[in-house]
Length: 416
Image (cartoon, rainbow, N blue to C red; front, side, top):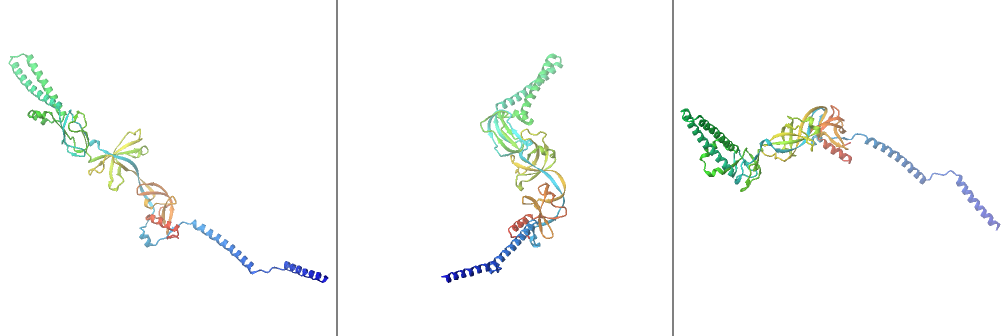
């Protein structure tokens, strides 16, 4: 029993000694631990490289983007390079307007005498010549006027004969002076009466030659009244039908000579100091084939209370009739010319990241440059800043460079 206890204690001491030995002995580096530490070191090195690459990327983003093209590609894409320099900007105003009938060549045709319509020879859109018969009326009032004229003419003849007789008798001392003077007064009154009847017929449009032929006309012609065109033009309104009773002031037709038209432009208050008679105007209706040039002939002295605009008028030739009254037009009025330090064509301006830009040609390629713009017209624009005089820029084909720069953003392009 004692031997067994001693043996147990001996084994316990050996185990305790082994534990103490491992506790105080320097630990050898195992392959597994070495592998883990190597991975840790590699990971640290990788992080440092990543940080380094991140800094490099930040540096690249701060640099200007550039598009490089070969001479063949520049020619193929139609890219033109020009040296920036001074230029002139023609300043213009854009004004709205409307085509109207030339009121100086417009006629409202009225019958002048009341009557019943017997014939209508023209309708809307017809071309008529001056003095052409457009309609025929039957007028009792016209018959009365002609009868009064003929009666006055006959009474004048009788009064003249009576005066001549009385004059001879008075000269022979056969009749009294009173009878002679009465005959002279009656002759003067008949002359006045005839002149009044004659003027009434002239006012109705009858010529002197017509009145000379009137005594030989048939009775039926006394009621016939012909409505004639006062000028050559186009019938644009018609208010007459067969059998209708017209008054002397009824507007039967409206005739317009459309070989010329008016273009009335609305001039805003802010633009009034720049607009005056004599300025050249380019008119358009949105189509290149419908462009025309004219000159402001009149500027109204009054500003409308409702529109707060004044009217500028252009008399426009219209031989082919394409400028129809009622059309709305756009007018470009040249109001002056300004010299600027740097001017470029509008084709050179591209919008890059919501800013106007031009492409500058450097020794290595094309670089987008943000610019500040000033005065402009349809073709050119002033560059206030961003492009210096003497620098070479892309005047034509800038849109192609913009597209190439967009490809670069997706990793497919000529940019570097």
